Length: 298
Image 1 (cartoon, helix red, strand yellow):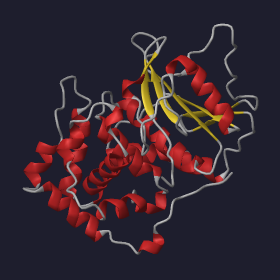
Image 2: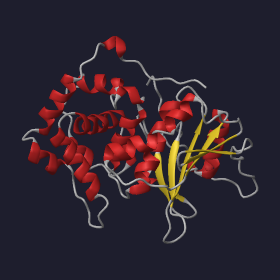
Image 3: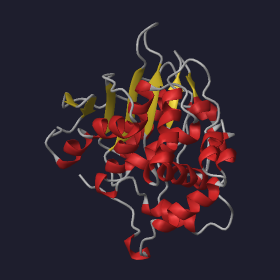
Image 4: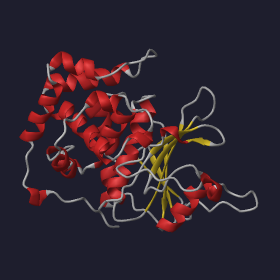
């Protein structure tokens, strides 16, 4: 695929990380031979970046070997992401620190991830949550490297971190749909042009109940991530009633009892939710010439 994306989310326990909830975004699932990746006790772990010190932007603390300028356009934009996510989703703000490690080179990043998280596949970026101390907040980490997709990847992974700093057990498809929504530049208002074009060209119905049944990341491919974005965008950007369904569902995820599926709530509003989605996508028609990936270079 043209954009061999890219990122992921996982929740790790103490010691060996739990890979079942790692989000593999938009790519075929490919695991390396585990026996080749288990780190040897005699080999020192690759160093994390941080020679330039720590630089805090909003609730994100960035570590890099290259000095970071907080007033650079990228970090100015990221400083506003926290308010964008919490205000848009009507979630209480969190002050949990997110530690972000920016490697200077892709090879250094991949070498560290192979050593520290050998069960994970090769991806451009990862959000990882560790339990933290008993009774305390989870420890939130983002790992990635400077590259052409740094803006997209940071917005995506930091959105995962923000949402998971407030909510626990977010359904796989919804967590990813929200991250896809906010990874786009602010001026696009959540509209992912590549996903829009791809979903509209599909010859099979977009099936939310099928998405909700997925509980293993290996079950999600490029099409599922496109669908997750489409449903999320429809609920946030079509009608106030659809928006209320999603916001109400997110609030239910804060409750101790299981929230259940979202589709029945949407079906109370629309007799045929799939038709409502198709109408929403048609209303966002754009010329094909405008559909280009967003690339940010340092």
